[in-house]
Image (cartoon, rainbow, N blue to C red; front, side):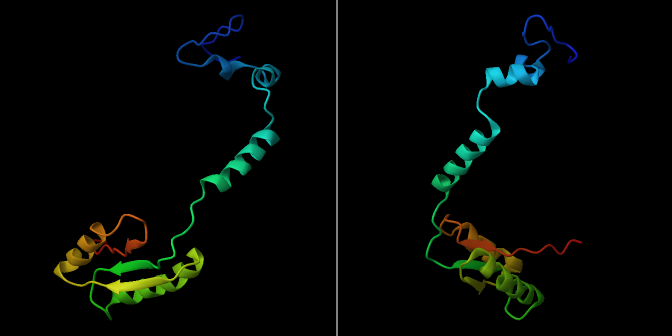
Length: 124
């Protein structure tokens, strides 16, 4: 028996909902849906929520000059990221103003999830 509950009457006490103190038999009687049926329903609903991936390639913006350390790591990341997504990943170098130019271009891009920023932190 849970602390702070009245077992004779299933009323919430101290914010504990009444169904939290039910026995497994009482719970099954109150909620007759089995686990298998719930999982089958969830599995049937998942394909309905999936969205088709756009045909456009993913653009990975590296906000630093080409040939630098960040560019090399960004290109290596894109080589593994593309096959994992199943899409082409294009690396776009937009250097200038210590990364501000590339960051602003990503912030102003279309909000469809195909433009990503490869940001690094030098404050380690």
